[in-house]
Structure formats: structure tokens, C-alpha cells
Image (cartoon, rainbow, N blue to C red; front, side, top):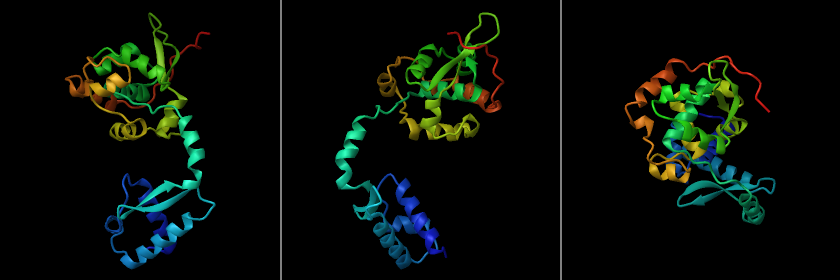
Length: 231
């Protein structure tokens, strides 16, 4: 049996992460072995805690479940703040795959990205630059001196990472991207992001397996082969 403080902390976490109002039955499934009446009592205490004026959010009972929401007395200020926010970033499947290549192979050039994906990535990279998820990082010291690309500070903010050393596995990265960036698959998302919807989505093509395999084989970060960015 959990101690009171841990039980309340878990209840708080469950309600926080639930996309829909979480019912008592749903909570009990996660807290196997706990007494139902005790859980109900701690829920009442948690609700009372958040009703204090020192909290900007509270727990409401909605559709026979529990859900966090902001308090009515703060709505005008919060509405003004929401109006100042940038529109959410949405990425198509090709853009997400290209972002993953850059994240796990940075700094990397367009030809290197194209080789991994099996399709031209120039237009997608332009989109990622516009969305400030990637930035240029000098030029590679090879014939032609192609531009190098790496992820940006905004990338770290959107994915909640301290630095690129905290990048998860590729499969976890895709799930994280869906949540953090509202990624959608298909032509609708490509049109929303300004990309060419005719571009074949690499993960669904014959190039998908080689691209994923190439990344899985080597997800370390190569030493920057860069020169100082040109002014």
C-alpha cells in the first residue's frame, strides 16, 4: 500500500497526463491493490488542495471523470496570453523523417540526408529552416563545401531536451514528435506546412527501411567538420 503522499502524487500525475477526464475506475486499474475508498478520499484532498488561491489550475469533475483546467477568474488574462502564442508547428511525415536524420547525424549536409532518405530533401529542409527547428552550421571541408545543418535551440525547447545528448531512441523520438509538434501523416499535413504534397512520404516507400536502418546503425554525433559560419 502506498503512503499518503505518494498516492496523492500518483493521482495528480495520472490526471495531468490523461487526454480525457479520467474516471475512478480508470485510476483504480493503474493503482492495482489500493483501497477504493482510500483513493476516493485522497482524490477529494487533492481537489481541495488545488482549490486554494495559490494555484492557477484546479481539478474539475467532467463527464464522471477528473480533469485539470484553469480557473474561471483567470480566463481573461490567460486568453490574452494565448492570443500572443505562435501557431503550433505541424510537420508532414517527410519533414519529420528529415528532422530525425539531422538530429541523429548532425552536423549533416543535404547530400548526406538525401542518401539516407533515398529522396530529395531540399524542399523539406527549407520548411524546417522556416520553422526554426534546424539552422546552418558552417560548411563541410570537402569538395564543393556543402552547407552543414544541425538542430536549433527551438528544437530543444519543442522536445523538452536539455541538449542533443538527451535524444531518445528513434521510435521514441517519433512518438515524442507526434506529441510535441502535432505531426500528421499524409497530404493534409504537407499542405498545412507549405510542402509539396506530391513528394512521396519516405517511411511508406521502399526507401523507408534503408533510411531507418542507416540511422539505427549510427546514432552517435559525429565531430563537427565545420568552418566558422560566414557573416
